Amino acid sequence: MKLRNLIWVLGLMLSMHALAESWYPSKWGKDDTLGALNEITPEHIVNAAKLVKTGKRYALGMETSRDTPAFGARTAQIFMVSHAALFGNAGEPYGTGKATGNDDWALLFFGVGSQIDGLGHVGIDHVYYNGNKVQDFFSQSGTKKLSTSDIPPIVTRGVVLDIVAYLKETQPERIMTVDGNEMLKPDVAVNEAELKGALERQHIELGKGEVIIVHTGFMALMNSDPKRYMAAQPGLGLNGALFLASYDPVAVGADTFGVEVTPGEVKGLELSVHMALLPKRGIYILENMVTRELVADEAWEFMFVLGQARIKGTVQMIINPVAIR
Image (cartoon, rainbow, N blue to C red):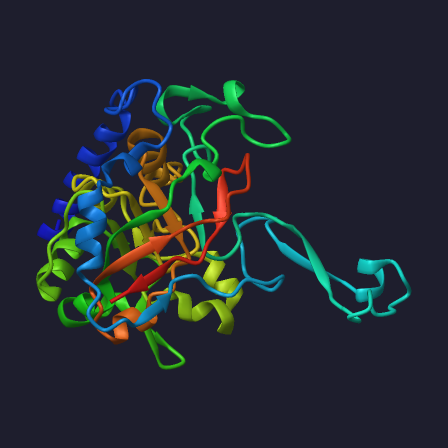
């Protein structure tokens, strides 16, 4: 067995052992509902603001529509309401100022496109973050606990790790090119070795209370070949997720629809990264993050800002975080 494969197997065994350990109550107490958000202090926010040197903004959220590829039956349907229906007067201008207007409504899953996975989204055997059992908070009209509407504004240092560039230099056989776009092959698991390699290449370090985003380049497939984009994806392996978790981040994300490598590293052990981060550690997951422009500018660290829509009772939310440098 090659040394690299042996190291991977040993790392995976240790990671699976960590997944099975006792995980609640959380380190923030048995009544905590915010998880890793507790890591952000006023000092984190002040230091993040110091990273702004050019004033350039990056939208990390993608445009979302009914054509956006999404997991399972998830969809986003938008409906526009005409001026006539809005004012109920057959389309005549409203009032002496002759006001006109339109409105819209949606039938959608909040887990389409760029999204944050809240702590009520994924559990282990119907037990969620901090030992909350599904019967204690589930309601068809919305969760009674662990709602994404309770997430305070997230402002902290953000970091993007360019795994594509690192592997292109060290293991080019794990890279593919589609329509001129370089990306990880869909079976590539990003683990500790790859993450450490990217950190060293980019000359950056990780710290507590931050947002870490992995660039795989795979999002380029979303528009050109959506079926292929959804069929399998590169992403974090369990060992890689636990390595990042050791730094106590607020959230971990990637430019893919599920963040973790899919299908998983071990057949039958699906969503191992989600289980390791959300219920066990209270670390949020950011899916379908737009990273290409950040990487093109080598904007490895930045001020990360997110104020999600506060719709009560939600376990996920469509988002458009902003990176500022």
